[in-house]
Length: 291
Image 1 (tube, rainbow, N blue to C red):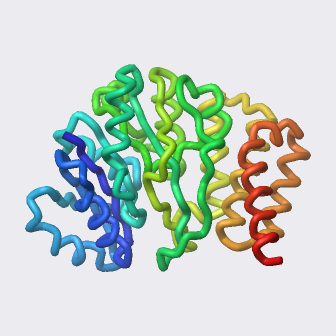
Image 2 (image 1 turned 120 degrees about the vertical axis):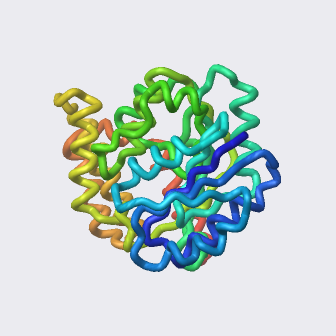
Image 3 (image 1 turned 90 degrees about the horizontal axis):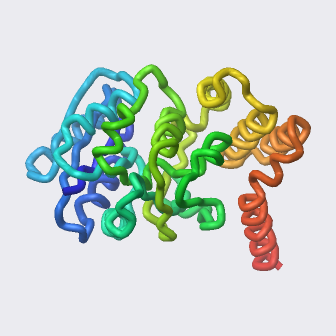
């Protein structure tokens, strides 16, 4: 069985679509565990209508953050595999089937993940992430410098999750990066070259808070590098903040972060060469279409 853990905090406009996308999966043997992490916007009222579905279990708790919510869902899970998705994202039809097929094909891998497409609050496609940015195998070395694994597109073996102790509940932001790095130091991971999740970009989400993200990046890097953060890692953090600015529709502010990154360490351009190539390709395609 696959246990799909859905974490929800103030996602009233989106949670029903998320659950429909999971329930309609052609992969038959799964359960859905929704953890309402103290929502105050009426998310709980939407979830009540799903209580009669035998495949869905609802857990309610006071707001404790994503790490606590994900651990609560995993503790309640019965499945051999844990598939995580946030309560405002959308699973594509092959989300579970392709994820499990990869883990069955590669029994030494503890985690599989796929590509994502970015959508806005209305469901319109913003951009498509290219496969050149993703990696398989022993990836802890590169993951230490940048998190390229989209969390809402991962499926992990429950035994591996338990072996590393789940999520660190002391971390309130970028907790997925720290979790994935710990997992990647002990196990191989497998990339599935398919779009498995539609990732929703919301201006009100914690991911879009620049100051909070800057603080979180620094805290995670302090832990991953044991306090001795190399300059190229700091530059990578600036690239991450610039990417958030692009999602927020602030290209000039993004450019300032990218320039800062190059000043911190010019070698960061090589670390992000795949992303740079993809962005330039998309830019020229849009330019030609406009012409």
